[in-house]
Length: 183
View 1 (cartoon, helix red, strand yellow):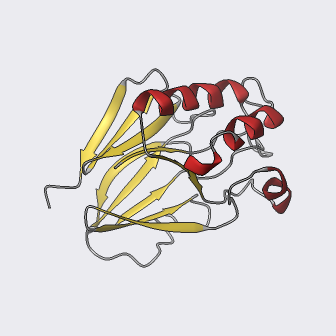
View 2 (view 1 turned 90 degrees about the vertical axis):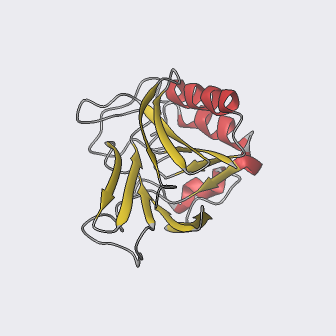
């Protein structure tokens, strides 16, 4: 199974198009979205080509391929226009015999952990900062932001395949990777 994982589109039609192009080129089985799809939020500047209605249309076209969690910028009104579930605070995946706790990052994060056992993975966006870390018995991963990266990061997404998580820029160039198979 191959997954593309992304977060924080924030209504940018420009970066959503780039992400969906990468998703198609990666030939992934599913697109995992970690929230903040349509609204830019009061703390962020407007992203390039801010056009939430265009983002809605693009995402709805591949609704059967999307798994999504709610970000801190999602609201019930977003669920009225998006044709796939967007209001769950988390989802649990089992990959390579490990639990992957996927969430946006505003409720559960490194300072407020969900229940994890040794080797489990906490996967979230929200900070707009890429991360692939082994932390005190678990893994912490963040694909960064599709549209509004922070801390000098590039616009990015993540690919999961065969126990390897790889962060890439929106041109498909590898930034970093981590394998969870060694354990």
